[in-house]
Length: 337
Image (tube, rainbow, N blue to C red; front, top):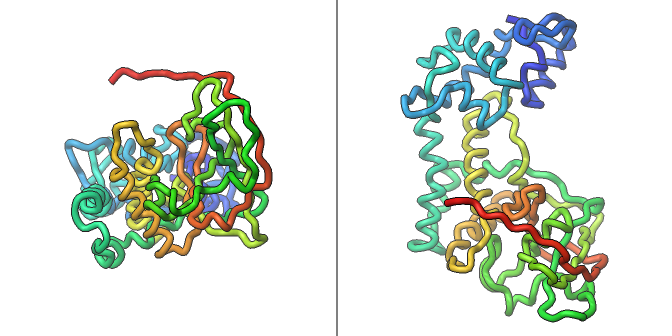
């Protein structure tokens, strides 16, 4: 079966197919004069991929499972056609695209340890957690490789709400994190250890500080204060599945990052205890030690189109300007529970 790059959404797989520069007719999407590859050339990739799933009557179809987590194929028809062709050629009990599956116990046990670790950190061993188990047994130190370099060309934002009206904007020197003596525990920093919380646009910071109607705030613009870029672990980055000999690790890493990202993004409610932040504080320290990264980026749950960043060492950033703003419109929407 000849398939073309248009049948897939994974960028690295698309690039692999197009690297052969072979034009022809696709037997899946019926497009003509497109970059094609014999699907049998991808048999090793699909074997390694399917080895991470097992039949499970309580699961969902292999087609849906792959698409919902990875968007490997361009659409569900392409997924069904390709899987129905390749699966009978593989060493697997999963015979067609509609077989109900789940991940193997190896994967599920690995990522479910995040829930166990959270309870342990909150209510058990807080300072002497079994790091050897996390690194040597579970391999978590290799799961935070979705990274990018933050350079001077990127502008980030931070907001401070005024507790009175009619005042002046805070100065650039007042827009950093509070002194360490006044630092409370946050989603990424423990009590007394400052980190700089930033967002990638001005609107997101208004949501993050929970600004209300007619509130006055100062918004500061921040840039890296060095010509040397810094490494950031990115919880928002799409992950390519097309990684031969590393698919199992790739799946574990992405699923774990998704779980942690949800906890990082979760806003603190009025009746929540700061103890809820201890697991994410731990994982940020884990990332800092085992990856050498200077910060993390994750999706804002309060403003889904925005992204938040935490810079572990605020001295790496400089507030270059600040301005006074006033909230003149607010929109709230409830959902039925």
